[in-house]
Image (tube, rainbow, N blue to C red; front, side, top):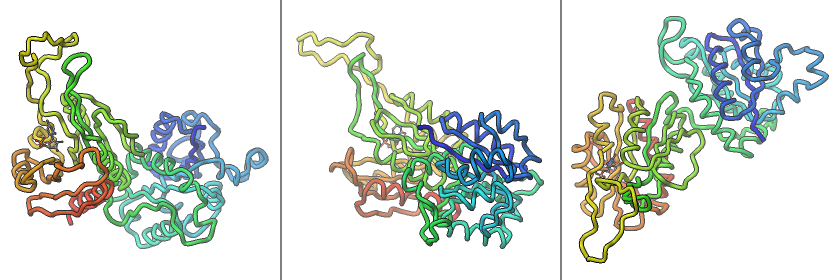
Length: 420
Ligand code: C5P
């Protein structure tokens, strides 16, 4: 059954972006029922929202017909997730205080479903102590609160308070919906406990508003219609990094070679087969704030892909197979006019791991190299012992699951982007 979102649109210039969000949600087959505050109606019309949701748009609390047919409690419980986007300073304050003076706030008080608030407001309103106090309260109450983006505001000021891009909100919604039964438990506002459900740590290691580009897996380089050159990469480390970046709130593009792994929630995946396809997909995904090149790209491809299956002729001569070097995607990004601010490569070595990684960092124009010794069972395995080589030196991490390597790397990336 299609998943359902109850979208509450509050007032603010960013309300028009709710239309784009509805379009994206519908594109993912997620049903949307919209509720507007009176202030929201000053910015977008119920008609345009209704056309996009293909449903009645709710607004007035004392709509007798709706009370009889649905009732506001029902409205708030039909959904899998309640999303407030944009969430104005005013509605956040009411939510924090438990005020229910219109349909939107009444639904928010009555719901037993997870709630995601996506704030958008003037930078000074965002930084005001009252707003920050309300946000802290909401997070403590188990409400998921996205961080606003930083940038120019409609009011000619610059700073934090912009509504995150609709694709980023979509990613967060998909992430929460994918959490399934955990996220569907009643939130603490109703159960009156202090437990926070799946509340992302938004205070630190935050990648909201950032675009993270990851390559993962092997590449397959065709020799003829049935044979190809490949390697043992499973894609697990790269997928774990993409998943961790999405959890930290980033918009993530994962360019994946041929692997059998599921796409992590909130990640946009581009499947490719060859190194050259991977190079094109990476180029098309730019600009990115961070690129993490985890793929084990094949160094060579067959110079000519045979149109028919190659045959042995029994003569004992070497195989008719000439090889050509593949483009180096990481090195190309290092030179690219749109080079990501943080460019990270991986190095799989079987000897002198750190020395080779240092040399690779310089040769490829990368900022960091994550190096590992692949003489054991790293490729295809679950754990990894890596060394992080930066301009400041090398740091060796203990052997840990690939998911833990991913989480730690994403923390380091968020800190580096935040200038720590
Ligand atoms: O040169 P080497 O293959 O050891 O470099 C490994 C690093 O370079 C990895 O980050 C890998 O993803 C990247 N790479 C690439 N394109 C290639 C070869 C390697 O992006 N053709």
